Image (cartoon, rainbow, N blue to C red; front, side, top):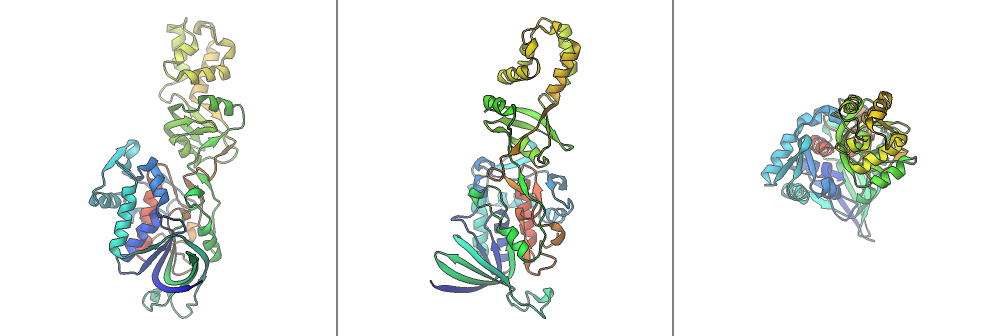
Amino acid sequence: MTVDSSQYDVIILGAGASGLLCAFTAAQRGRRVLVIEKANKVGKKILMSGGGKCNFTNHIVEADNFISANPHFCKAALKRYTQWDFIAMVERHGIEVEERKHSQQFCKNSAKEILAMLLDECAQAGVEIRTHCEMQSLKSLDLSGHSDKHQHEDNRPSYQLSLTQDHRVQKLQCQSLVVATGALSIPSLGGSSIGYEIATQFGLTLTERRAGLVPFMFSDQMKPVCERLSGLALEVEVTCNQRSFTENVLFTHRGVSGPVMLQISNYWQQGDEISINLLPYLNMPEWLLEAKNTQGKQLLRTLLIKKLAKGLVKELQELWWPQQADSPLAEMTDKQLIAIGNNINNWQLKPSATEGYRTAEVTLGGVDTAEISSKKMESKQQAGLYFIGEVLDVTGHLGGFNFQWAWSSGYSAGLFV
């Protein structure tokens, strides 16, 4: 085994969205930057996101689009580097953009264009990127007598890393170390706990972590219902813990997915019920009572098939009015119709679990933001150590917000490393 020794101003762990943006931002300031990535190629999550079209930001970005123990933490970075800053770079690189509902911004052609843009900016700024790197150890070098203020000026390294690449051990030193390692979601794309381990090593607190933006599963009578409806999608309103979203639900052979379920999963805790309004734009008890007066000879299922998919109506009939399946509306009591209408507007379901990190798009929780500077993304107690992107306790809603957090937090750190 041969041993390499190299010194850098900045080493960034992770070549994802936040790491790459931080890298060229720092390099444009004249810093010597190395990005190390354990996977065989960079930006895997960028490439698979948005069905390969990368929902890279949103026209409307507000603090309320993010979940954190400190809801104000994200504001400084989002203000310093906005969605318009990123969109301007996208336009400068000639990437065609497609706007979808809820102001979501996608690549018209391919997510590869966003990754190519980031790598082009890195190349122009002189950033070095290495893949297939496995970190073995990390330690802080003694900086006694050297204040944070003089950290860059005296040119002394703060951290030493030992890593293996192609069976070679490398010892690397840097003044600033940036943890952009992502989190636990989608391990097949590189999700891991390494960022949390580094935070713990240097005494930082972690908030509770769980899978976010993730489908639900059922173990009760709903499981076979979902299996039979697998592939059906419709727009509904879903509510849990005082948060509501209106979007498509998708029934799967395991449970329920689709944008609306991914959104509400961020607010769901084990044991909670979720409420589905199957027809959010209709007061169903009133509508059914009116239909009884005007279309009394109709069967309820015949009436509902005009509003909902036939297969779904069949399942609802089995659940809510099997005894009156062949009774015309005129023969059903007002009380029965009101109860069915309320069920349609407020279908209470209790998921057994989510699908977990295997399919979760994000990880909720992470490095406690109380211990991180919202201006610099630097640890308040460990000079020269920065955390950006998903490893922090900041999680965005579905719709480009997690990428915007990556860009904003990466840029903020890039100004100070």
